[in-house]
Image 1 (cartoon, rainbow, N blue to C red):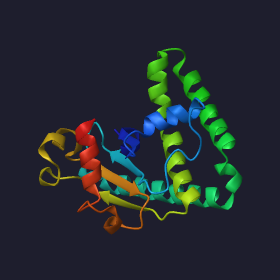
Image 2: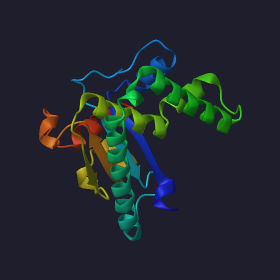
Image 3: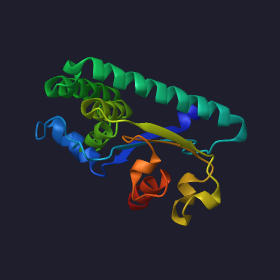
Image 4: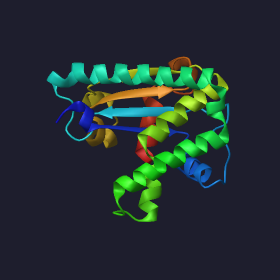
Length: 195
């Protein structure tokens, strides 16, 4: 299976990001729904179900590079067009995406499942990250790992992560700004251990 089809993306910081997006879409919260001092973290897992084979490492690294380049373009676009950070404009874009997801599902899911799909949609999540970085004029960085070896992953997470490649992104200048964490992997491992 191609790496691009066996990939998964999400936000893990703040831990309650799905609920915040849901409340924002319902009009119960306004933009920005992430505070300036909060760290935002994104993850991309390559080889989610079938692991990354040696012959696919270059493809996964290329996909990671293109992902970071697209993210940087999105941040520049939001930074240079402040109107796109308007709460009404943002809610309208999220709502359009929600309608597209609903049409694609063709009534196959209930409202609870639909809410989860919308709050976990990669398009909405990448927008959320880029908007946060642009709105607060934060720095950001991405780091790629893997394919992860057994000794790099805590025992309870090995089934999910061993043999996978992982791209992590944070609204920080570097890993040193992630204190009290010793590495970029630690906050992600802590979050994944709880889900």
